[in-house]
Length: 486
Image 1 (tube, rainbow, N blue to C red):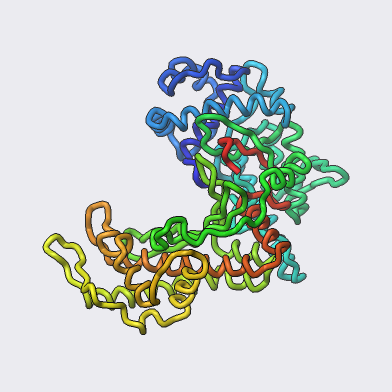
Image 2 (cartoon, helix red, strand yellow; image 1 turned 30 degrees about the vertical axis):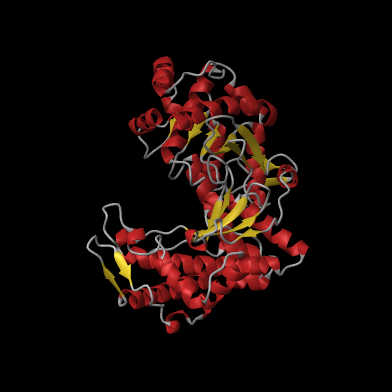
């Protein structure tokens, strides 16, 4: 997944490869990376030709493992767990790991002909094919905004035969020998017209011990290996076990509504969908925004995310109005409008404030923001949502927005850069984030709260499935994670 550093993914490939070479778990575990290297340095060199991690140097991996004990512990724990669990869920892979020596490849590779490169090429072909079919037949079969939403695998374990079949298919050329997939005989990339076919290939390759897609989450204490879309009913059982459905909402996580720009839809007793802006500032020159949905609640890391029109696409399956409102184009319009409003608020308040001798903003305590600046759909709605979806008291709308600007988090002092510069751009961006975050979030809560029990649960489950790469169209894969992970 996107939240695991590339060096940690590369480290995991190395640790799994060394364990394969040894043919047994690391027991006892070396206490830190320095001890590991002393004990397994020769083995690391021996497996080097079977481990690919372009763009990440061994020195970078070693520096980070030395500094970050949790990622070191996680790498050891996951390698051990992959060994023990494959015996139950991927026996042919286990049987290739168990003997001393190394037969498999451990890959975070890139480019034409590599495992990850071949999978990316096949995925792109299938995704485009399904999109074209949808356009021609006015169908609505699920497609993906990016590869990580179809498969969140961070590394792949593959056999030489697995590498070859993927590269041969991705090349677009006719296969010298058809690949049997049940009653279907695959002869070229042209056969891959649905994700069902592609996923069936991945599933068979896992079963044969030719491929193991592994998604990584930091797990320094205990590890659990979960199968996603591999064993029959594994996803539906997970939904039932965790009681995944609509459990309510959180408009404000604290008693100060201004402290959070995000809104949450609760999906279990411990996990939520967080709707937030994950943007940057373009180096402090111009604001850049990315509205996202993220599964939160695990102790160690996030459990999946999606952005852009994916949110609208998923909601639209159940509620067409919600789908249209959360389309990528409408989200962009809302963000643009919020930025304009924020700019006007900033101009209004700047003309009625001064700086004290320490450079802090000193507001006229009696001045209220001009009504004309906040008399618009977004400001009116955010104020109404705050009153409706929290138990906090805000006074008038003018008081609500005056207090927003004067709040420590949003004024110049609250948006200082690391170098201590009071950045006007950051001030405007922070207010814009609050405005569109609470406007989009409040609208989302309204869609859920006004829906039938069946529909609100369906919307929550669909968002979880897509965000967590668990839809029927998502790739079969294994997930190694902390016990608290969804």
